[in-house]
Length: 341
Ligand SMILES: [Zn+2]
Image (cartoon, rainbow, N blue to C red; front, side, top):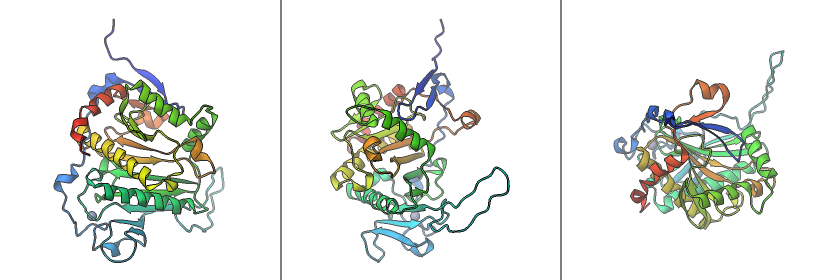
């Protein structure tokens, strides 16, 4: 009889994506290590474009909290200096003759500077600081959603160089896309085909809570768990237990509670996995009318422990070295350390 850990093929109920869970490969899972940023960074870095005093080095300011002028901002939003999309893209583009298509790439690309402090981590922000970051997400989401060119909004955070952050100052980004990406369309399609008392995502959340083997914790409004077919080792979702309105229509209290659940999840990842670099993604449905009642928004945290290799790039299927049930056990060990977070 073989006693090797066996591999499994799991399917994500929300996307239909398959993932190979291959625990036998866990031994080769070498944490890439975090950037270890907190211990080494100054409170203010005079060379950092996002630090107070260097406001003139960024592009046009789009938003700040508190509103108004002056230097005492707590959150500041600027257009990305190297945007992936151009806000006014009226230029005529010509494709070379042949089977190629080209068109303008209009849209939005913004940077949300989360604190005037260069050295602070999201998990160190107090309730008010964190709330203001989420208020800025909500307000900028609303502004992007009101732009007729924008069909889909994604807000994300790259923490550390392994997650593709090029500036260490705490910040998130917002991208407003002029089309709905296939993955998002597929999630909406699968969710629309689900007929139940509640939306498919909410059903999955309740089933994760009942099952319990991948659950970190649940409050009245939110649940934190490693999804059954997580495509990344130690991936966490912070998902609502109620049908939330579109993200820009959330009330303050619900937003605050999401912030607390999110901060705890991020603190847990930092404690349990040695402060790894990570991506946080606010997963939202496309902007089309009514999509939010079928596919609610949720938060996704992806610790960066491995990089995509040839196999993943070749076929678009992830190999995950840690079973989600084992990932949860590892994460939960650190729960007492985040008791006060
Ligand atoms: Zn800075």
